[in-house]
Image 1: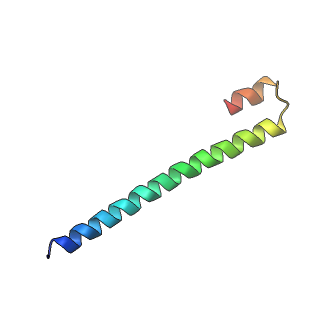
Image 2: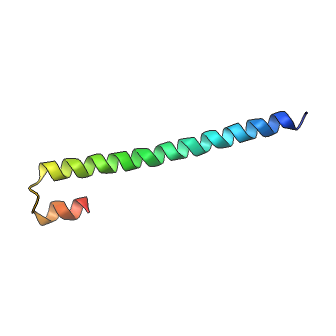
Image 3: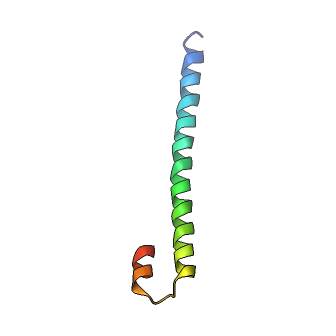
Length: 55
């Protein structure tokens, strides 16, 4: 029983770290999508520089 509690704590902290890393990953994806949408709406569709920035 003595080993059970620390192992559980380690599992919980590992899970929290994984979730925090995933959160940062999703934030990056979200900001990338928002930036690309803003660039597309700010620029005419057929200008090459904006297309290059979005891609």
